[in-house]
Image (spheres, rainbow, N blue to C red):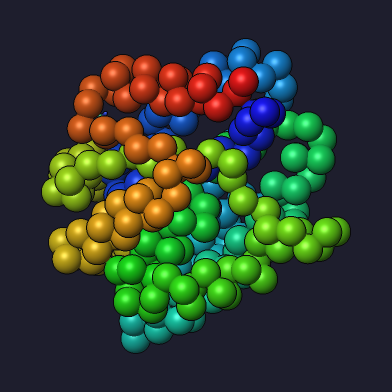
Length: 217
Ligand SMILES: Nc1ncnc2c1ncn2[C@@H]1O[C@H](COP(=O)(O)OP(=O)(O)OP(=O)(O)O)[C@@H](O)[C@H]1O
Ligand SMILES: Cc1cn([C@H]2C[C@H](O)[C@@H](COP(=O)(O)O)O2)c(=O)[nH]c1=O
């Protein structure tokens, strides 16, 4: 069976170490796959989606409505899929995305209480391939799991200049995010592989490499 993962997403609560491990693992993926690797992120990945990212990260008064937030994220994902992800996959590149659809399910579906099914529904439009109608989804998702207090502590002690609206959402919110990710991992055991992100950066990298290798056979 060909189980080569050409589209890989990384997920996790704030400060889980996604950016750190992705940077470290990219050369390994390039060597393993013998392909160019496109590193991208959500929200973001192209000019329109990056503009939506800036909008969503800024403090707003009044506070943005949760459905507006979910719809803007779905719109940014649509742009990301059509302008960035699909062209790279067509060019036989490997796509690595720092967050994707599971973030909307965990943050908006779970933590904002919009419900995962409804958030999935609006995202069905966002991820639909215009050429064949199929959903554009990662074959492999690496979920970095850690207690939210540890992730927030990492962010607040190391990156005080970059604290944004979502980082500040409160402990209960972030706990809901983690619980939702754990639920998603339980429901999608073939796609979502969990890594203990409380380990050292070197140990996390070793675990991530092993998963990627296992998914490139
Ligand atoms: N395994 C680790 N152990 C301890 N600290 C770590 C580890 N991985 C990353 N860090 C540190 O934690 C902070 C957050 O890491 P990073 O930016 O990679 O996380 P992230 O998951 O991308 O966060 P966010 O999604 O909130 O942007 C950084 O200061 C980083 O150096
Ligand atoms: C894709 C996506 C993201 N979010 C949130 C999660 C984070 O708080 C920010 C992204 O910041 P990061 O430093 O790049 O991790 O956006 C969300 O709520 N819903 C989503 O779909």
